[in-house]
Image 1 (cartoon, rainbow, N blue to C red):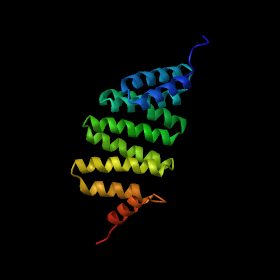
Image 2 (cartoon, rainbow, N blue to C red; image 1 turned 90 degrees about the vertical axis):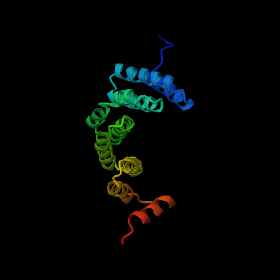
Image 3 (cartoon, rainbow, N blue to C red; image 1 turned 45 degrees about the horizontal axis):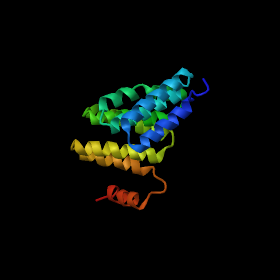
Image 4 (cartoon, rainbow, N blue to C red; image 1 turned 60 degrees about the vertical axis):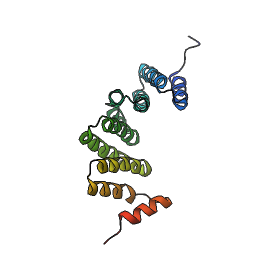
Length: 175
């Protein structure tokens, strides 16, 4: 029993494996970490590991498995009152849906992710989600929706980078 790893140690190993780019091994390690946290009754940390597993699966070009790994994790975070992780879980689901070319669902989930991140006060993360949503709109030739979405993401940024300031000037330009 003395050589058994804690859930945190398993999670740390999974993160290290992920950093090396060995995504199949990271997928397995994150699954083990999720299971270990679940065994301890820590549902939020188990859900976080499932989200990490989802990201690794998406990097490994396994979009359907990525979606399945992340599904329902947003509800765990919502129940725990953690809007930040809820938003990130929704964004992971939306990314998988986007990769599966289930665009209508991806748009809905990205929007929900943005709302959760806004509620959490995570302006920079929300901007990233709005940029992903805007790019999806552009690929669907919905140019006005893309502009409105990007404007929405940039509007809340308090200290924009030079690139963000330039984008704001372009997007908020009045004819």
